[in-house]
Image (tube, rainbow, N blue to C red; front, top):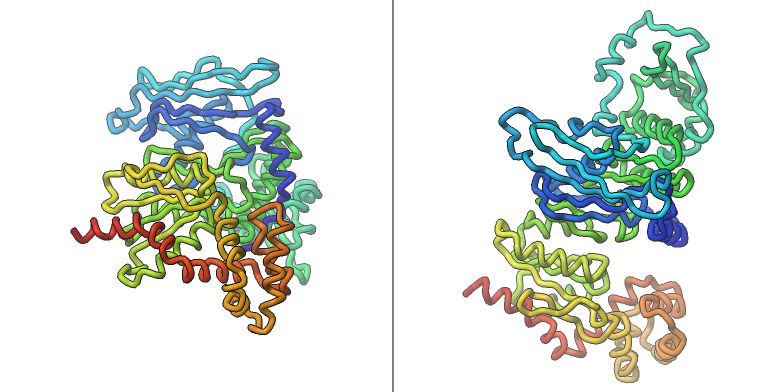
Length: 496
């Protein structure tokens, strides 16, 4: 996967800007009191670009729609239409908002409500904010759009005055997302009001072509960027299925652009997605998983979501804090030949709170017929709870624990570790010295293995991690068994 170009410092600035209420207009919180499958669920928008992930029918668009109708610019019927007696369940729906609008209140958040009573929506003293909504129809090709069909004709022509160059800021942003030169693209105003327009492009050999021959993703990106760049500061931007029509790298670049927009134009963005690529540039605070009436904050990938909702052919799901703990657990599991490894899935959840929440949701879901267990790090502030299948890994930091176990026995294990690091056995003395030196100088346990790899000579961090973990598994079978016991207990239940 392509590495995001968004800097950590930029992420921190935006998190701090939200925390300190640095926006003129912002939607920091929604409480879904009762709407569709949600009851008394709260969503905090801690980062100005928020991804709503989840399975089909999980409630992603419900969250997006709830955000949209916080402001009078969007009518509730766009997201929450009522179809006669078939939607009687809408009775007494209620959404509560905390809103920042410094034109109305310079210091305090404003509380507003949207309710569905007496067969219609009621919004008390509804606020105003420029709002853009990009639905999935944005990627419908021009040849399939009703308003465009009459222009697919040999007789179609417009005055030269109706042809305009696309602005430089739109060109620059679109080129970065699409990865192609669009500097000679233009837009044609088809009607005098400017309500209908047609894009034109140019090939490398300078042959001009109309939007009827654009890729659907290319057209949608240029049009979205044009609208976003022309919007005022503090706008709310809502996007359904952001990856629609885009390849994975373009999806990442689009999210990076939205992060840049959040900083440059003080905009707030909320989008739904099924794509791991779309969430990769975002911090855990920016990601919410909407799962059949529940909602969880944290960096869950799409594969782990399938495990949480039981959409996998497994007999046990294991949730851990991160990828290192996942690798540690998988190595421990590999020591038990009685287990069918295809029956277990281990998922790193990018946070102890997320791992515990995912485990809790999975085990309380009556539609899932297999259990999950959770392993938290030794220094986690979450509580281990055997009743709810939450267990604590030994040590404090997993990286430090594994490293120190090998380090403390490095004279005995040095030769084997050297070979595992793809170095000749004869160089074990220098490897031992490096292991000792890194332990003395390291300040961040998460960097231990990358520092060893660089010092030994351009060995990847993953190779070093694997060498340490596998050696630990071989040399400390008693501790491996203690970690494995909850897993083995689950399989004993399966066959009782």
